Length: 122
Image 1: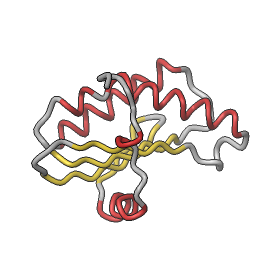
Image 2: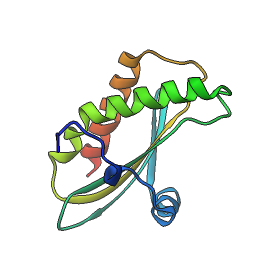
Image 3: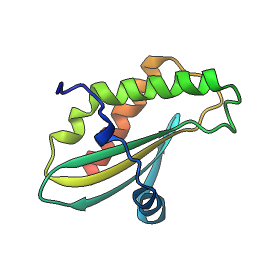
Image 4: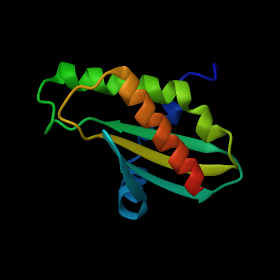
């Protein structure tokens, strides 16, 4: 499988894992994202990510889908930042928190800064 793919196994889907992430995870804000992450040491490296664009800010589904696609693409191309560290089981949620639909370049820069800050805390 390509290093720049985003298979289903790398997406956070388990209700228990999502609940644990939001109850005991650490959070931060880098415009236009609020991010929450939870890490625990493990023997093998596993990173799962959740993308969210609230209906509160973007009423139209096509705008939410556009922002979600841009975020997924930015993460997919830059996820090697997380995979270069030590083995850790990491769950990450990226929540888009801007009312404007920002260009891809802004989204990609924010995702890169988020991934770097998470690696810095590990």
